[in-house]
Length: 487
Image 1 (cartoon, rainbow, N blue to C red):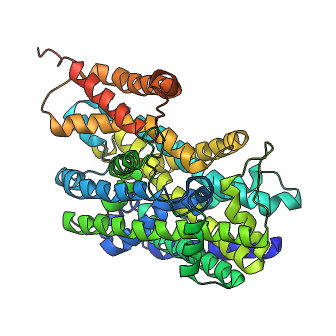
Image 2: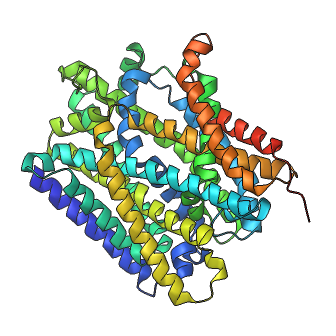
């Protein structure tokens, strides 16, 4: 089995390198690397955005989360749709009007260089950590179910994955990523759908019967009505909306792909199409979670637990997939590999872009060769940082990673939300020197409040809405900064 999985992994990787060769064989200019020449078809970007946004976390944590959270993830998805509408009609017109390569250049134009670098630093911290955790999940699964049995240490598959991603993005950059994302989205969705079909066939039931059984077991409950619960439906919708605005609309990785469309109208069609596809795709993954639990209930298959005896949601899908046999194991591995690549390749390119434009100011450098060498050095450096984060996180993997990622996002994207809201909806100037202090103070205050919310606020626990509070505190802090006196 392990050898079969390894062969499938190698064949898929070869396919990615074929795509890389096709997209970069005519050269590797800086414009192609950073903006794909702004010639990407909108429907290709829209489809590829599914895989880039979902990643291995959705592939495993969303189905696994049905065990403890039922379908209460869906209100968050409804919020995503609202967030994409804001991106399409508020943020994209701004980015196209200013002809931006890095979206944080807007902060420099609006407030100053320190604000630009503060926003860029928060993105680098958010994306480096978030994307590395997504990649970690793929490496973790392959290690547990393949390499561990061969006595290979955890760091070896981690190094292999990062090296592969570095190699196929090194030349083509975003021009390659836009097309590899379509390939990876296809494998990700096929794997989820095939897993559902395989389980239904094993149980001898249809999809309608599966949903009926799941409803009777309480797994299809969508709306949490307890206002103190961290998944209260209204909090979920609002959080989903602002998570999308920040983690997509204010995120260089996601927006850089949208900005490869030839014009604003094409980019808007891409974003709105993606928002509707997300609803359907997330329903597929929740249905997969219901199928996994139905299989466990019908066959007596023991769900995976940790040392304390608690069910580990992230391990449910791989455990059932490998238990069912070679076919489901292979499609699971292909889906995970696709998810891992799609969540990391674009991020490496975006992190490189942010450093090159927001810290090294590529737009002011005329020497293309100098820019090419610098770009490649930065690209390799971020690949090494990726590897360090993946290896360092392993001892701390003790909960659903999707919750971990959103917890991190609540603290790191909040200042970006506050800065862009202040810049877009006020005309007030600020003293750029004090912006970094405000952007650090807001998440620190939010962290203290979240840790003590149950004790201080009568049992209330912050969920993803901590992002809104973080953005609000940043906004208020910017209001308190007096404009710098003009000479």
